[in-house]
Amino acid sequence: MNSKTLTCIVVLVFLALPLQGWGASYAAGAYGGFAPSLGGDLHTAQHYSEFQSHNGIDGMNRSMEGYDTGRIDRILGVTCGMLFKTIFYDYYQVRIAMNYTWGYFGGTGKTVFDDGGTTRLLDCEYSFWEADIPVTFGISIPFWKDIRIAFSCGLAYAYADYSYRFESSTGQQWKGSFAGWGLPLVIILEGEYFVTENVAASTSLVYYKGSTKVLKDGSDAGGTDFARIDFSGYRYSLGVTYYFGSI
Amino acid sequence: MKKLTRTLLIIIFGTTIIFGAAASVSAIGEFAIGLNGGVTYDPNDLEDEINQYNLAMETYADTTAGASASQMTIPYAPVFGFNLRYQFNFFFFRLGCHFSNPVQAVKGSVTSPGGITNTIKIKTFQSSFPATLGILVPLNRRTHFYIGAGPTLHQVSTTITQSDPAGALQFNTYDPNLSSNKQDRYSSTFVGYHFIVGAEVPVHEKFTLSVEWIHQEGVSPAVENEGINAADAEVTTPKRTLRVKGDFLMFGLNYYISF
Image (tube, rainbow over all chains, first blue to last red; front, side, top):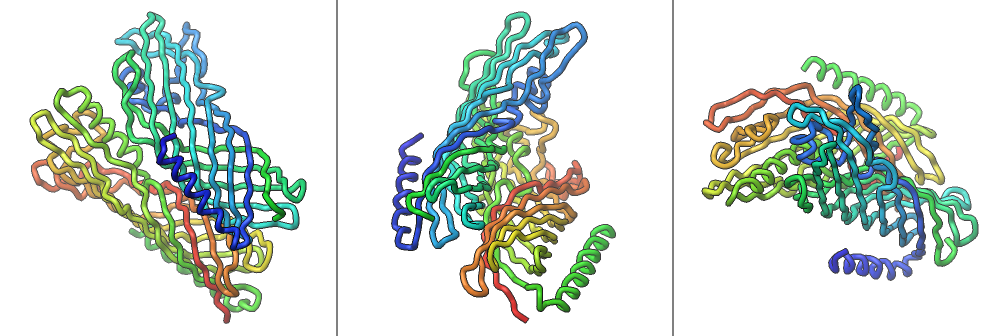
């Protein structure tokens, strides 16, 4: 995280503090969950030029009689994070969070590819992690006396690191490594059930849409590659939120 | 064109019936008008295409000594619109329109070792007219969540301009899907669909504030190019489709009308 981002967070938190005068209440929480299809299809230029795949990891899945291949699934990520939010004028919510998401399942397998007219086995391994800071504004509506449902949207500062490593049956290797940031659009639907006056169990569904610029491969094996990192996708989380003062 | 006229007639006819019926029972239903503003990412779903041009430029700059490239960015665009809504118990019907157009030019360039620069610009515009039928989940008067879906009439235009397509990198030699024309211009009017999720709270007796997410999908039929090739001759090929898949984040100020 660079100093500019850190400054933005501090400024946002300080801007939220004077809202106390508007009957604002504050809350902080932590949560964990999962992110299907982390990084999207993970396509790079070399997927097409070397391995005949137009759509990244999806197009890499092939099988052939006599070859012991294994499916390469898209990456299922695990995510965790912390949030700080302010609710003012009863309904309006500003929410800032910090998330870390990393690949947990999928992204490895064996396929076949056409190596200059010869079919060869290829071991594939993808890895991906991402850190992001979404800032959203929206509406939080209390239902009955112990439920609150919020809908908010905004932008996130997102940084990700994506790498792959392929090795053919002849021992030849291809590696790609990409790191970059983007500002994806963020939409959050979250629900809270108050188990005490100040503590709520929370659940959220978050949608990201956006990507980085085209990035140059930072590795030194298998030729130079280019890719963009895709932040688009859904995340589902469960957590706990603590309200500083009854709401 | 016939299909479009038929669709418009169906929308107008359906609206007349619904609002006509609604007017007769206005004692138990409510009308509201709203102004909306917000933002969308990548209007007209150009991300893949921009990415292909960027890949071509970066690969060329990397493999050609002395060449350089500047990528195009995928745009955020402001969205403005208004809507008219009738709500009856737990249901609502809404007619709206919104317009989006990137404020900043989508612009990139590639320069050959000899110093010849080809600047590529993309201009795009979208106007959408969604008709939504949905349900409201109320808490108090004028405090509710809502969810709905329906058809959308889209009017879309995309223009790709290159300053010197024959001078530096010729994009179609790198990837046959890319263009090496001076200008490629496509426009179309077609019907897609959308869904809306939103929340609304009161700010005054008759005013409410809303926040909503509109997701829309739609693909035009293949349309002719109204372009100019590198030799300044008019071209009509290649034909292509236009897509409107995208997400809109909208904030709205709504006014309830009493009769």
